[in-house]
Amino acid sequence: MKRTIGILSIFIAMYFISGCASAPDVSYGNPEQVETVTTGFGSTDLQMIAEKMVNSLLATPVLSSGRRPVFYVHQVKNMTDEHIDTKSVTDKIRVTLLKSGRVQFSAVNEVNDEILKQLEYQTKSGIVDPATAKSAGYQVGADYFLFGEISSIRKAAGRVQDVYFKFTMNLVNIKTGLIEWADEKEIRKQAKKPLLGG
Image 1: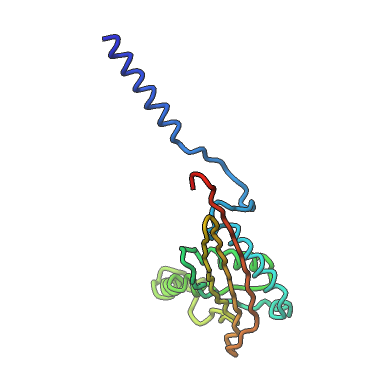
Image 2 (image 1 turned 180 degrees about the vertical axis):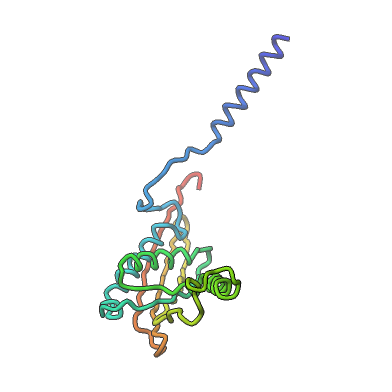
């Protein structure tokens, strides 16, 4: 009986030890730190693209005229062979530009249905005080819209893998249809597999 209890105790101890050993060691990191876990598109790539596009846009005559034009953001096309959350890229660009105080953004692309529902609720439900109800016909039209795409070229030879990303963005004058600004950011990443265990 003692032997059975001893063996059972050993198995229980081993179970808890192996359970604890398999738990990941989680810690917070600096979001600005360069991320080089894989050659895939990552947070550092997003930050570099957003910084390049914002700095370039802020230097354009469109944003140095003194007035605050209204932008509309169209979704960035992902032409790469991997899943990339392109909305995160445009969100980062939009937030940084808004913080500059030199541009305004139309929310029509993202929340137009909600805006329309709210306008209908305020004007037709009979619940909202007419003195505070917002009516249709006052939305500000966008002056420009931003659109772009991200593409990639992936190559491998032996132990070396090379990935090239190119992000292109354009600013279109809605009235004239002319592209008044365009820029691109190129990123190249390389990885070399180890000789053993790769």
